[in-house]
Structure formats: C-alpha cells, structure tokens
Image (cartoon, rainbow, N blue to C red; front, side, top):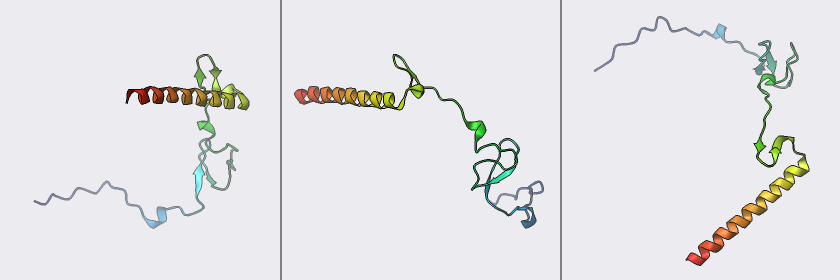
Length: 101
C-alpha cells in the first residue's frame, strides 16, 4: 500500500544563488567571521583558532601531585618507574601462573 506524500510546503528550498562560494575557512568563535584555513588567528579580532576551547587540565595523583606541573625529567622518571613496577607485577603473575599449570 502506497503512503501519501508528505506536505513539503514548509521545507526550505536552496537555490544555487544561496550558496556562498569562496575560500574554505574556520568560523571565529568571538566575532563570527570566516578565517581562511592558512591563518591561525582571526584577521578581524585577532583571536586564535579555538581560543575559547582552551581549558586548564589537571591530573592529580595521590602521593605525587599534579602531573601537569611536573618537569619533563620528573615525568620521564615517573614513566620509567611505572613501567618497572608494571613489568615486575606481570613477571610475578607469570611466575605464579607458571607454577599452577
């Protein structure tokens, strides 16, 4: 059974003249202007790309503190220590499972 056609009287019609052609760009979140993709800052207001989306990230680990505020060397040492602990734990698990089989 065929369904009746829907009433399309309220559907907007897009014509070729309504389409704006030009250089591809990103919309500025502050002034609403369109900025070409090769620019990092808005030419009208000077805002940077996704300037409003920048947020402060904080990763606090008990006993260590905020990881984002650690120096690069401290983060590398923390990573190496964590890898060593994880390797040791996996070695113990393999050792225990090896004796059970």
